[in-house]
View 1 (tube, rainbow, N blue to C red):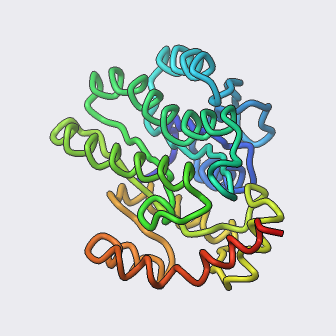
View 2: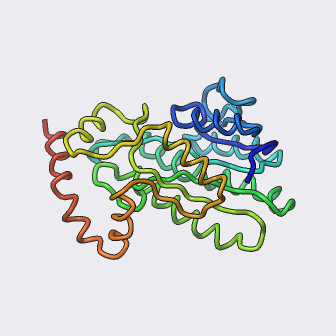
Length: 251
């Protein structure tokens, strides 16, 4: 599929990974609009909304629903790393709003015009963490798991409409989303972390090919399949790393 003259909306397009994706799409001829809390100097247009609250999401959905989009890319995300009980109630709610509720609501907002034209694509950027649900990433993992389930259910519902649903699950990416604590955990556990330029290219390639479910990284992509069949085995495999995280937060 060519991106030339396609109207593409991307949430979180001002971030490190999002900006790289925007640049590539624009270089291939797309008309890119970023939906974010801050202005983007990458895209041709910015829709400024805060996806961390119900009111912000509704305002964004109303704005987005006014025009046709060829492709919606739900990329925006926030993360909490640490004991679940230490996450503030405000941040917990925002985590589910940004990572799950906003993508669902924005997909709902773009669907009427996509259906009317018999074409379109909804792209949800999830995470390997949504299939291998990591301790100390409880809200992030569970929200991404919900996004994965939503993508699959919506794809089945839209069969025959000309609208594709793509779910992309990278493993950890070296971006500013990672706090110093996450980087320390990655060092202690030898966590694989990919460079954002490579992941941006792979995400764009998955969108171009209109793929359904895409998981990046080995052995993580293999663990996704094992976890689906034998979660107890993955529990045991991750237990040593979980103990390292516990020790980090006991200091």
